[in-house]
Structures are given as structure tokens and as C-alpha cells.
Image 1: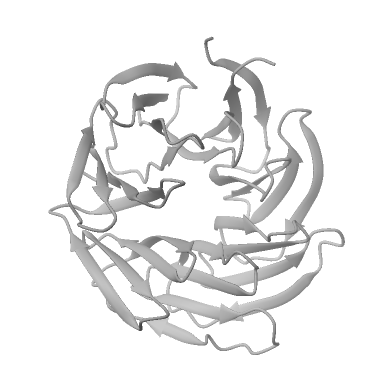
Image 2: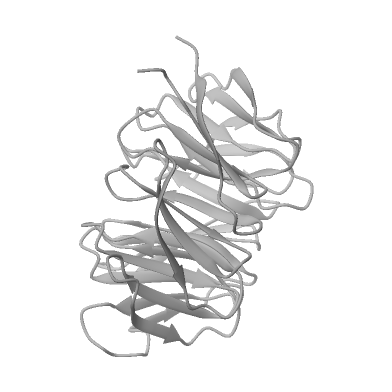
Length: 295
């Protein structure tokens, strides 16, 4: 059965910087150059709410485990914690000295993690009204482009070409370094591998324990853009965007390209993989495109 385009939605918020699913995949969030976040149903094209309060472009957004809160990071160097229903700002966190590239919440949504252009990863306790981070990791030598929270580990990818895994329980950091800048990372559902999207136009599958490179995926173009990567929930295929206006899909194990999906005439830079299903949302310009298997 072939993948089909299910919806194409003009979000009317300038250039979209990121698209993300909420925890159960029922809704999606987009953030853009208009300094706003939009919450929508990607299959009915229903806009549910718009959140405005940042002073500059919003670069990343994530929903809480119960979908009652939204956390966003912006070029204005701040994080904002939003109430989904009212749209009110619950907390505004300012401690980074540079733009906030990536934001994540732990499984219980009690701790927020942010990665910034100031080369740091910061942890924030969302249960108390404290405005200072509870922990700052400053080992990176360049911008921290993306963070992942996985159980008791925080995984951070940096433009310095390194992936750093912070084991919070053991109080140690494990560093795996490549010869090129890393612009995006994704983790398999079983936690055994990391997918690294690199500035040289190659995606690499890395063993999470040994640091060995298991597979390389080529065929897309990066140019000077941050092009995100993803792994479908079944851990069978990897996907990324491209500066050519297409998305490319490979088999995870064999590394064989299986599909090139025409998206638009601009860079396909952000993707959101459904947490339980087969749909994938691609951001291209000011539009998002939902692709998946027909019902």
C-alpha cells in the first residue's frame, strides 16, 4: 500500500520553524517566524488555538504528557510554559544567553530540558515556581541543536560534531564524536540506536551503547539548512526532508532508499512522526503536509 498525501495546510504564520505531534498524536503544533505557536487537528485542518507571547521567532515546541501544557523555545532566549486551554503563560524562563533551539519534557512532564546556541543544556523543575535552572551542562563547544529525554538520560547533539549522553542517575556523560556537525537526532523506540542527521548530507545510524556506525543513508541534500530526521514508530524506516523540496525514506536495516515524496518547492526542514501510527507531517515554507497510509 502506497503512502498518500492526506492534507496540506497553510498555517499562515510566516516560515514554519518546527512541527510536532502532541503526546497521543491527536493534534499537532507548529511554531513560526511570526513569533506564535498554533495548535491544530492535522486531519480536519481545524485551528484550535494560537499562542502569542514570545519576542522573536519560535524554534521548537513540545506538549506535556497529558496535553494540558505546551513548552516552547524561542530566538528571544526564553522558554514559555503555556496552559493549552486558556492560552495563558504559566511560566517564562530566562537564563540562556542565546536562542533556544530545542525543548523537551520528561515522561511525567515534571522536568523541562532545553538546548541553546549558548552551547548549554539546561534542566528546569516545572513543579516549583523557581526561575533558575536546576542543572546546567556546558560541555558542548558549539550550539546545542537538539535534545532528547530518554528515561534517566539526556541526549544532546551539537554543531561541534558530538553526541553527549548525560546519565542523570550515574552522574556521568558519554561523548561520541563525528567529523562533521550534527543538525538533528532521533532515537529508535527500543532505545538501541540513534539516527544522526549530519551537515555533510549523510544520515548515520549509531549504536547507542558502542557508538559504532551501523548504517549510512544518502540521497537528500542539506545545503546550509537544519534538516530534521525521524524514525517511524515501527523502527523499520527512517525519513528526512531535503533542500530539494522532497522527503526521502529508507529501510532502517538495509539502508535502501524506498521512496522520494514530493512535498513542495521549498526546503522540507521539519518533520513530525506520529507516536503510534504511520502518519508523518512535513513542514515546507508556511505549509505542513500530512502523509500516511489511507484508511
